[in-house]
Amino acid sequence: MTAAFVPTGWPEGVHPPGTPGFEQTAVNWLLDVVPPDYRLHGVLVRHPVALATLAGHHLAACVEGARQGYRSARAELGDDLPPGGLAAVLSAYQTEGERLVATARAVDLVGRALRGETFVPGLASSPGSRQGGQPP
Picture: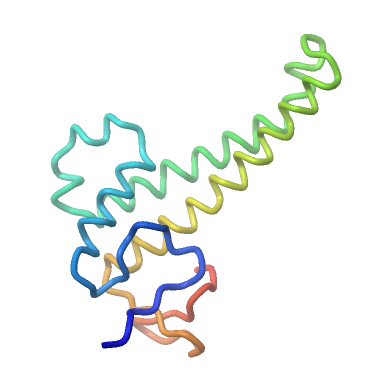
């Protein structure tokens, strides 16, 4: 049996689409990337596509928040932090922003897989499949 293909950026711990446990591991991972209160809404566990959609919106807002924070850090904190402190804050924003972007890409991949999209290595995109590792 050949292992199912997953594209670059697929989240660790989420089973490949079409394998046993895929949906449950996807739900568990998605619940870990959204605020804890999302667990209170059973509809999101019953409908993983809805959870992936909400997670995508949540991550998009987080990415934008990190970008806005980075852009405004000098004006908001420049008078209150020493130069080294401000540089460290900017570095934290950059590191966190990169992590958030990677997580948002992984959420997109999982959401597409939950919708039935298959990932095929080395083939051009076609309806129902997309070349692995390429952004939407």
